[in-house]
Amino acid sequence: MAYILGIETSCDDTSAAILENEQIRANLIANQKVHEIYGGVVPELASRAHQQSVVPVVDSALKQAGLTAQDLDAIAFTRGPGLLGSLLVGTSFAKSMSLALDIPLIEVNHLDGHILSHFIKENHDSQVPDFPHLCLLVSGGHTQIVLVKSPFDMEIIGRTIDDAAGEAFDKSAKIMDLGYPGGPVIDRLAKEGNSDTFKFAEPRIAGYDYSFSGLKTSILYLIRDELKKNPNFIEENKNDLCASIQSTIVRILMNKLCLAAKDLNIKTITIGGGVSANSAVRNAIAETGKQLGWTTFIPPFQYTTDNAAMIAIAGYFKYLNQEFCKLDAVPFART
Ligand code: KG4
Ligand code: ZN
View 1 (cartoon, rainbow, N blue to C red):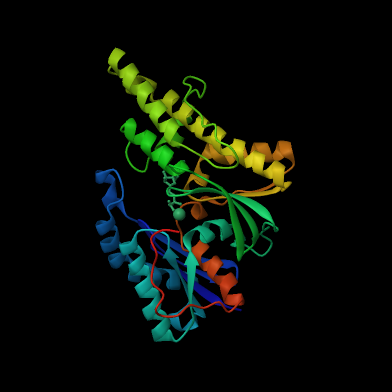
View 2: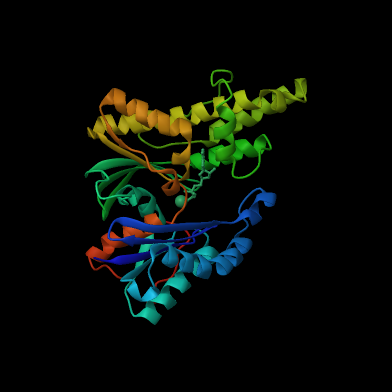
């Protein structure tokens, strides 16, 4: 039996989680509200907020799990990709704690964390995906179709050539002045809108790659032209705009995922990353899965956006394999 502490500070959420083997014992996330007024994450403010939160968040996670630091068997931390200043806070904290407690240190790739989040067990009979499976990884920084052969063997078979799906949501929301992050706002407003009202450009690129920059331009032009005719166009059509944008993003995501699943003849499909919190994305995976006979894994909401439980589970796999890292491991910003 092993207790693994996970620490995630790659962007603007300070999170600490504790697993007992694969079982979740605590998962705490301190969100940083400070960025909202700037319409995006301000790196310097993010690192300062991590610095303030990391000790209390780890402390609360230990309390919630009913443990003390001395009970821990290893510490897993996000080494990258992410904002360098933010990563440095979690990395330095994890290093000092592992040194003080004399327990192993485990580095985790943030994206592997999102992909492996399906292996976190809420209870003893939680079902987990088999291998190989396909994961649609959709976050604010990445959009990939990953062939997951084992926890240590993953192949990216498709990726975005420009914007990520989360950026497509966030940039669309910015055009409409809906605040940051835009994904959850669009999701909420889309529920009251008609997705067939507006048509936007969809990419035509070969293989399993994605592109979202054309969609952004097409939204920008439509809104610019309509605003010339009616200055209240956004206000009067907000819900329909959100529903139409959301359904276009979902269609783009699903087309390539279905193609990859068919070509590779894989029927176990998972989804991960912040955009997997989107209700239309979740419905599309579940519905398409039913039609095509897939076994689908859609994460509970707390494991969609950035969280340390996913870092702890990825760390647990490495712990079993005795894959520890040295104290000179430095964070990396990009993959
Ligand atoms: O995985 P994540 O928390 O951070 C990164 O690793 O990037 O993903 C954040 C992204 C943001 O772009 C945010 O707008 C999007 O996830 N997001 C959503 C929803 N909730 C979060 N996008 C659409 N619908 C949502 N409900
Ligand atoms: Zn993420």
